Length: 144
Image (cartoon, rainbow, N blue to C red):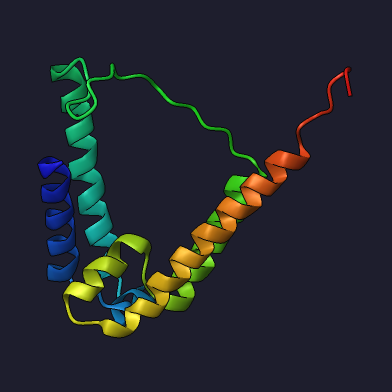
């Protein structure tokens, strides 16, 4: 747990330091007025790629879970496309993604609480929808 907290603090500090926890900066990026976010995300991608490439060669198991490294393949289905679209619209409207929303609180952006509340409502609606579709997709058995 301390490793996760430390990672979150480093992530939040990085977002705050790079000004990416400010919705107006993100909105300027989305309107092609300020491309600084490209360098922030590119730097994060390079560090992550290096860490995963080196980590999987040096360690045979994930340090936090102890599980062996395996390749996870996920299908690109309708749920992924719809969820990605909703995420993108929310990001464009609010100017902030979920991780940066919490960091934005740390830099004094109290109105971001509306976006965080929207994320919780969206997560609840998604869980409700998924449970409801799972109930209706259960096929009746021969004994029914």
